[in-house]
Image 1 (spheres, rainbow, N blue to C red):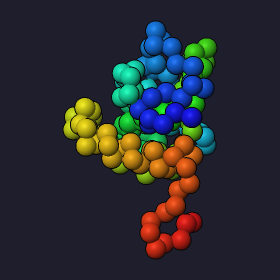
Image 2: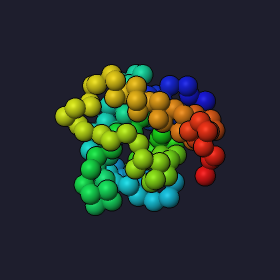
Image 3: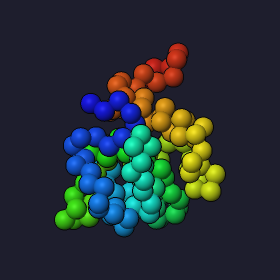
Length: 130
């Protein structure tokens, strides 16, 4: 298992020569949009996904570790999160957050501890899990 949320999982079969821009992005429970931008920088790889009408035209930043499979024939990227987990992630603003180490730390903590890759989601202290 990959420990860094900013690196692709081995199952993704990521080929650096393939431009993912325009690929559809599929959460575990349906489509969330299309790749608008991506980075393959080692230790800092990510996808910026344009969610279209799904969450009112906002963009979301997904660490590379959320990608479980890339289908180049169908031009689809599959991630191991639900739509709700992605929607609940720290809000992304391209102008403020791309290249912001503090935001990357916050997002990395969210995706690193949010199930399924970071282990069990234990909820907030003192509150039972749903």
